[in-house]
Image 1 (cartoon, one colour):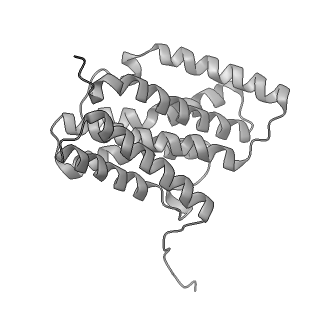
Image 2: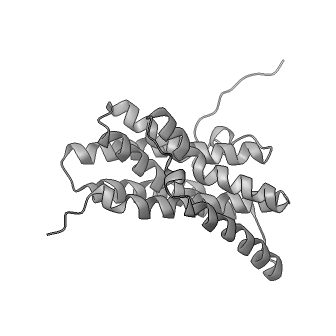
Length: 213
C-alpha cells in the first residue's frame, strides 16, 4: 500500500509554484521592456526568492533550487521561448496578466512552506510566517527589481493576509490529523480562490488616514 504524504507531492508542488511565479516575473520583466538578462533575473527572483528565504531561516541545505538545478535550465528555456512567442504573437502584457499565475503561486507556496515548517516541528506562528514568507517574498523582490513599490505593500488588496489565513488552515488540518496531501491542496485552493475573488470583486483592506499638512 502506497502512503501518500506531503513529501510525495513536494517536488511537483514546488515545480508548479515555481513556474507560476516564474511566469509572473517573466511578464513583469517583459512589461518593463528589460533585456533578456534582466527578464531572466526578474523571473528567477520571483520564482526562487520566497523559497530561498524560507530555507535560510529554517537552515535547510541545500536550497531547494540548488537541489534541483535543472529547474534553472527550465526557467532559462521558458524565458527564451516566451520572449519569442510573445513577440511573434503580439500578446498584450497587461498588469492583470500577472495576477492569475501570481495567485496560483501564492496558494501553492504558502501551503507548502507551512507544511515544511510543520514537518520540522516549528511553533505554529513560525510555521504560518514561513508560509507567508515563502509565498510573498518572491513577488516583493520581483516588484523591487522592476522599480515598483511591491504590490503586496501598497495595493490595499488582501494578499499576505490571505496567505497567512491559508497557512493557519494548513496548521488546523494537520491538527485534525487530515492526510498531508489534503493539508496542502485544500489551503492552496482556498488561497487561490480567495485571492482571485478579492481581485475581481475589488475587496480592499482599510488604509491609513493621514491628513497632509
